[in-house]
Image 1: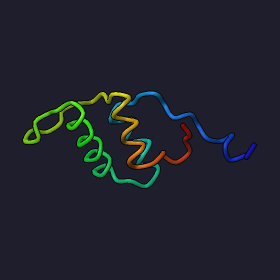
Image 2 (image 1 turned 120 degrees about the horizontal axis):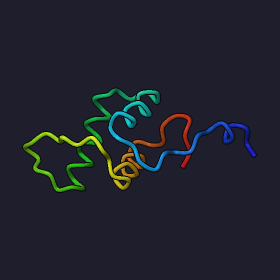
Image 3 (image 1 turned 135 degrees about the vertical axis):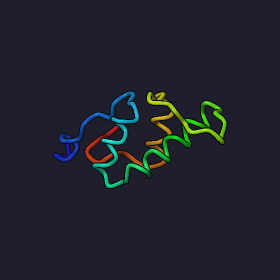
Image 4 (image 1 turned 180 degrees about the vertical axis):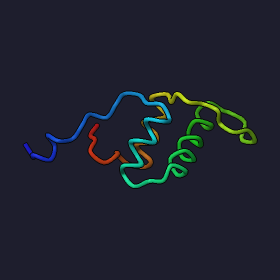
Amino acid sequence: MNTQEIELQQLPFSVNKKKLTALYVASGMTERQIRDGINTIIADNRKLPSDKPVNVQNIWNCEFMEFVETYGLPKGYKK
């Protein structure tokens, strides 16, 4: 086994926006990039109107996985 794999943490099953932001800010993304990305995914999945802000704190697992697929794994985590 690679020693680097041992140090990686398991990716959480679900997160809220605050936890998602914390995971990806450590990976070098800005809070605005993270919020814009997840809000777009949430609006698409939940068919929310595009003219109104996304006022959602809890992220569904499928939305979280789509974010991970789009932006990659956060630093220090594995699937």
